[in-house]
Length: 87
Image (cartoon, rainbow, N blue to C red; front, side, top):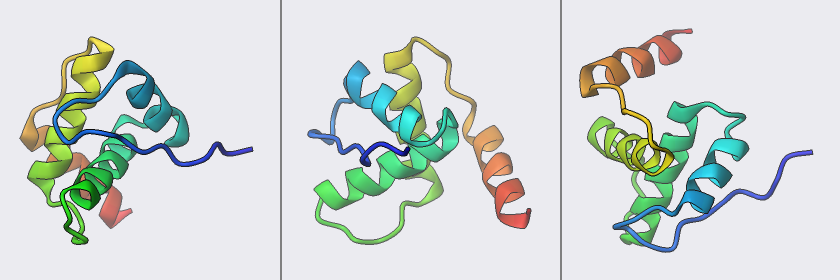
């Protein structure tokens, strides 16, 4: 059973509980969790546009930072995003 989709409360920070909720909702996939987080950050900012690569990378950075991990480089993330789109 899938849990309810998480939602952040701030554009600036992500709490450990929020990060874990996004990861759990994404089945442990950090990039999927970052994409969902980037969508929610855009929504909080009043934008309804899909997040661009820079926004997704920033969300991934926020998730990784709160989890005590190193985020992949922007280029590594873009390669993985394109690989997923092509699959």
